[in-house]
Length: 311
Length: 311
Image (cartoon, rainbow over the protein chains, first blue to last red):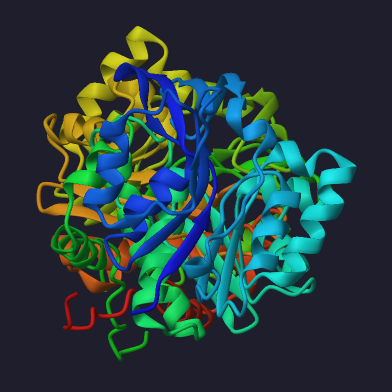
């Protein structure tokens, strides 16, 4: 069975939302991605943690059959940490503190068994590291990439990011990031500018407003599953990407139809991720839960066929 | 054939967006509503304009068979005027000036031929006027209502608004308004609080992010049609309501299925309204244009059936 490789942060998070507050919980883009993708396909994780990273968290990855051979455990130093909060508008994260810690001199080295991965996700880290990882994979079939304002705003890192973007199949950005990267306000226009640089698909994440995919074959609009009590949006974007890449890995269908289907599953998986703090909800759900909610989302969004009569 | 009655503003607008600037154009909630609804069903307009209101604009209404018997033309005084602008985020309107003019002492008096209207839309005006109009309609089958922060924020007008809401079938509000009215941040929770006050449906407008309908029968999420070059979002909400009420009037189907279908058409009509300034685009389109875009929206949003295999 095909596998999906992810490189990105594994972190301690301190998060406060209007619905609660947690400290020292498992966070990081690669964590959310792994649990989301593992619903569909085996995952190989590339990242680094410090000596303070608890055995309990490692056990969670193992329970979901996430391969940790590529997770470097530093004897010294602390695990990456993110501290942030949200107001009632959960679409707006406020970063209070970011401590790179062991991530500051992370040198990803892929185990031999990782180098044949066909599906690869470059989560949001320094673009040079994304490039480094991508170059170690022999013949990827489909590569997804995420980034953030910090790398886009600096001309040096943006130049490297642009190099990586040329080599990937799908770019995942939120609406603010794609506007910042291209300088175009309209997200469809901005997406087409990125397509011109090489990728086959641009997936624009709009949080509670869903996601829009743009390819040379068309546009696809995926509504977010409406939730009555979201708790914590941290990791929603990476859970979306995990559901997407996981489904794509399982189906092997990288056509536009396959991309649209994977995106809808990504949207459903992300809706679970925000229903609790940290990765709790992702750890608790099964593929059946995902399939049931997908069916519900179909019902909530289906536009009926038009009646044939005209006035 | 059933008809739809609308009461609301007919106005001169001065609008500036990043894509252009217009002065003294036809605006007002009842104008946008009328042209949108007239795509589907005959419209009867209740409102008032000043002596300065040009014959040309009246001709536009007549060309769409909008009944103007209920439009009071004051010999003195000026037409209602709205001056506003938008930045690149077209979801955020900035009101620079509002001149009530003849609207300040408007006393709606329905012509006898209007009093048997089955479908009624109370556009955003002073709640006491909405109540006054509603009481003049003998036996409405389906009543929709819009309002705004100005009336919700004042305890006196909010009290009257609450009286009107008890008597209507559908409440149209944007996400900010429904939060302000109920004090609940989550739009599903807020919508259910409004349902508890009487209405059968709450239609939450989210601009470029689409709309969500909530009833006792379920939730429906309508994506906005993605546009590459929206020009002016003024009137989008009233065009949405016009498409909705017009379709409902034409179909006569006020079941939850009928409401969902009408809402999808409302969303499509609104997408046309924002493609040009003022009511220009609404005047130019036909029902065939609406039906074609509805079919396109179906394609852009359709979630495929799940494959039966499980992992």
